Amino acid sequence: MRPFKQVDVFTAVPYRGNPVAVVFDGDDLSDKQMQQFAHWTNLSETTFILQPTDAAADYRVRIFTPGSELPFAGHPTIGTCHAWLEAGGIPATEGIVVQECGVGLVNLRQADGRLAFAAPDLIRSGPADERDIARVCLVLQIDRADVLDAQWCDNGPGWIAVRLASAEAVLALEPDFGAVESYDIGVVGPSPVGVIGTAKIGAVGARDDDIAIEVRAFFRAGGQPAEDPVTGSLNAALAQWLLADGTLTAPYVAAQGTALGRAGRVFVDQADGEIWVGGDAVTCVNGKIDI
Image (cartoon, rainbow, N blue to C red):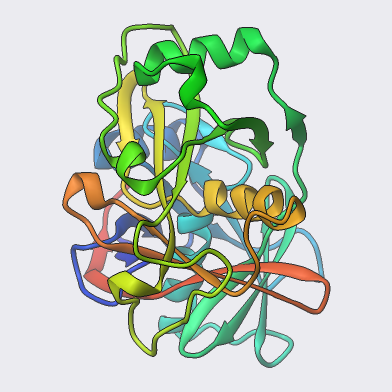
C-alpha cells in the first residue's frame, strides 16, 4: 500500500475545479503499471511522485492521461506540489519548490496562499496556418470569420489556440468531436463584465467582475473526446501569447469550466522575468492504494 491523494485544483471549493490523482512512492512502479492505473482512475491526469534524478529538484513527477504520458501539464503540477507539501515535503529553498518532469525543471512558489508555477518555454509557437485553422473551425463548428487570431501554444500537450470575440462566443461553442481525428484546441474570449488588463485578484476566489477571459479546452483523452474543466498548461501558453501581443496585461484572472458546471479560476502574474500561473488547491481524497 502506498499513500494516495486526489486533489481538486484551481478552486478553493471542493469539486468545483479539476481533479488530479497523486500517487506517492512511485519509484518501483513500471511504465505499464502507471499507465494502467491512470487508465483506471479515468481522470484527465494521474501523477506519480518519484525521487529526483536532478540534484536541483525537490521531487520528480511523471504525468499520465488515461492513454499516454505527458511531459508537462499545469493542474497536475499544482496538485502534485500541493499533495507533496501537505504530506510533509520540505523544499531545499524556502518558498520555492522545484519539480522535475518531462520538460525539465519547473519552479513553483507560494503567493497569497496559492501555488503558482513558472510557465515553461513553448515548444512550438507562432501563427497557425489556414489548413490548421480550418480543422479547428470544423471541430468548433464556427466560421473562419469568427476566429480573430490563432496561434500554436504548445508547451507539451500540443495546444493550438484560437481567440474569439467574447466570452459568450466561447461558452456558446458546441463542438463536433467527430469532425477530425485529433486535436488539442484552446479557445479564449474576453469576459463581458471583466476589463482586459485590469482584473483584480481576490483573497479566495474571483468575482464575476474580476474575470478577464473565459477559456475552454478540447482534446482527446484515451482516444475519447473530452473537455478539460481547468487547464494549467493551456492557460500558461495563452498567457505567453496574449501578454506578449498586448491583448492582456498582468495580473489577470481566467475563468474555465463554466460550461461544465465548474468554477475554475486561474491567476496569472508576471514577476522576476517569469509568467506565473497559479491557483488554489484542496485535497478531496486522502488514503492509500494498492498497485
